[in-house]
Length: 31
Image (tube, rainbow, N blue to C red; front, side, top):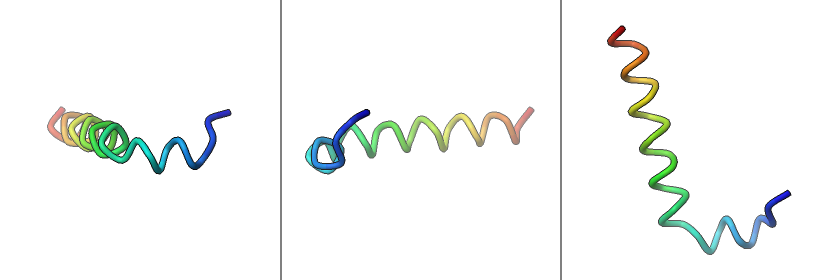
């Protein structure tokens, strides 16, 4: 399990992962 504090610290990584998730969902909608 990843500590919440670590996730909060890695805001950049969190935002990048969210962007990837959004792109993946958009691609799914496109297909």
